[in-house]
Amino acid sequence: MIVMGIPVRMTLAVIDDDLQTLALISAALKRADLEILTASDPVSGLELVRSQRPQVVLLDLMMPGLSGIEVLQQIVAMDPAIDVVLMTAHYSAESAVEAIQKGACDYWQKPIALERLREGVGKLLEAAKQRAKAQELEHELLDAYRFHGIIGRSPAMLEVFARIRRVAPHYRNVLVTGASGTGKELVARALHDLSPSSGGPFAICNCAALPNDLIESELFGHQRGAFTGAVADKIGMFEHANGGTLFLDEIGELPLLSQAKLLRAVQNQEIQRIGSPTPRKVDVRIVAATNRNLRELAAQRQFREDLFYRLSMVEIHLPTLAERKEDLPLLVRYFIEYFARLYGRSIDGLTHRAGMVISGYSWPGNVREVENAIGYACMMADAGPLDVHHLPEAIRGGTPAAKSWKTTELVSLDEMQKIHARRVVEQVGDKVKAAEILGVSRATLYRLLAHSAAKGQNAGGLQ
Image 1: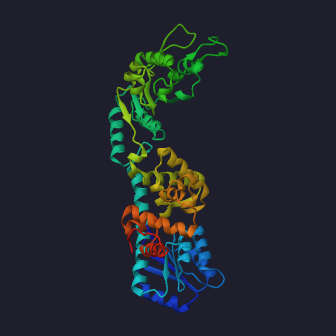
Image 2 (image 1 turned 30 degrees about the vertical axis):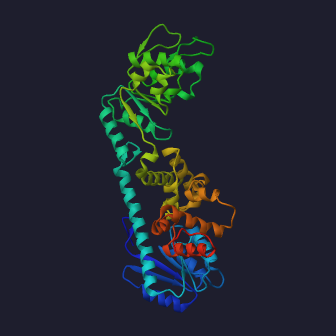
Image 3 (image 1 turned 180 degrees about the vertical axis):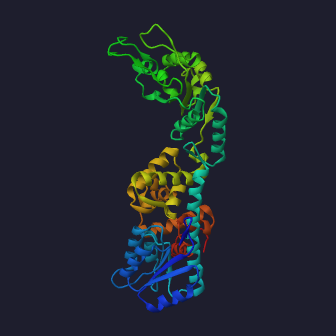
């Protein structure tokens, strides 16, 4: 049963060919809010998981037919949000590392003390419930922190929203600055939508894409016969935007000669088509955007100072995603919902592993890079939550773990798992936090560290 996206009664599946183990676990974990399902062979266990989608699966490693590792891989492929714990009476460090690499959340050695069993399963179920609550909260927050198509709840973005509200009813010219991918066009649209000219057109002109010999024609239009190829009258962007807003993107890329002609149009609200002796009045609000420092360009005489001051009477600066990290979960949730609808997929959030990779990546391309990455991941996924393997390789390769592997001598994957676990512990200085970063239990982390120390490596004094 699910209330507002949050399961009220949790489900646990136990797959083990030992009937006594199934009975023991069922009796030990029996409680009112938990449904316990059991299967005594891997095939029926997989069918049980497929039909019931439990939050947690306890899985025996050694079973006839299919091994626990093979069943684990099929469960992860089926629904990577399910927490799978492998259990075995024949513990080995190699099989533990393989299990973690293949997607298990933990690896327990039989016989399992009942108190440890209850505590371990209780934590996994509570974590699953908290993830469901977090997803529901993010969904609700999307509506609360959506401002004319812009998503944000960070103080920096709330200040941007407040400035847009104050400026929109009164502006004639606004300069929007910020790094590429921060959403400058969305700010321009919000200013237009909240302005008295919202009923008029919203025209976009990418100044960086205009050929030098056609800039004046594109902005101001031309008369038939004004130059070779002018076979008909053409209105420019200013006339097209008359009564509304003209968004001049990448304004810093305009050559100086064109800047002089633009200044006259902005200052006097008057344009003159090429080949026409008659000036024309226009009523256009200007939103200019740039990822360059126009003040520095003006000081270097690469941008007209008078045009800069005319455009920058009001300036709105957009922070990078690194400066508004608290907005990342909302942006990810927004793009998952958007692309799930666009592609017709039943995609429900992220796995814990994918969330850790996304939060650990630096996102130099800002919001646009998040949009592209989630769009790609939604194309790769069929249903269920997005997992790490759905993300673009550049995102997966940008994690701290991947970077440390690239600087390490060539060793086996098993050995790399142990080396990386030790490095994370040394870096953060806290085994509980290190286990969270690695996505494993503390018990698994201790085993990796102990095995690393037994191989003669320095485990940073942590025993």
